[in-house]
Image (tube, rainbow, N blue to C red; front, top):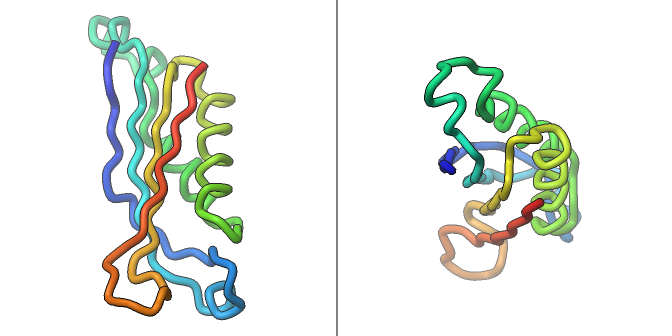
Length: 118
């Protein structure tokens, strides 16, 4: 077993319930933790035997580009695609953070966390 982490994927996107959020957008941070059996790739040194983090980053970028009212919805789409497209993944955990959310206070970010496993 092994763990692949993608930390602080920075994305500008248009999520939120407020009309302004969908028009002007905001900054987001996405962090992924991927559990998978990495024994084969550790011995073969072949990309085909592991979870390609370029593919993971591509999924995050594509799904974050689709506007959602809720961060939970965007996170769920990302997790579903990871499990569908990357069969070596046993479990995926995602944190989606909205930087400087418009909630009427001095808040650096708000984060939701979701996990899915086979």
